[in-house]
Image (cartoon, rainbow, N blue to C red; front, side):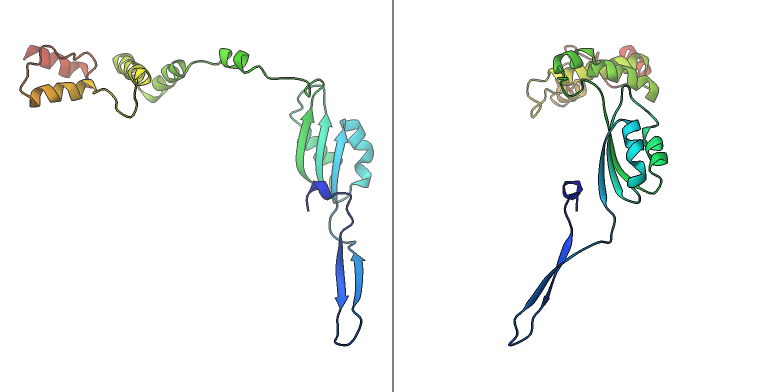
Length: 187
């Protein structure tokens, strides 16, 4: 059963079948079980009908002027025997309201801003934060994510393996600490 069947009368078919006899078929209405009740209206209108709800399963659509953070508790007090399975708040004019996706996304922070705000709380600050943000920017600018351009370390390693000079290799985005960079410069 679901709330689309609230006005249906539930029944069972009893059939008595025996060889050589005409079958007896009876439709027997079910009068036990819990009712499904769909309440729609203001809290005051629902309160007026509350006594007739009893121990039903209830789905409520409540017309409100403003969000009511205590709506579930209020309904539970109005309908103490009922089991409330769904609550929807309806606001005036909400049905005609169309969301403007461009206006909503214009107000949201960018992924870069979110990442820059998130990382310091996880211990990534200073030069490391700048490096992560630069790497993230490089990844976003990658023309073909399936075949990314080599990272700085990969370019450096390829040059070393090939026996090439390292003078022309950009080391500004290496993933090593500042102390290691200074030590390398001294060599």
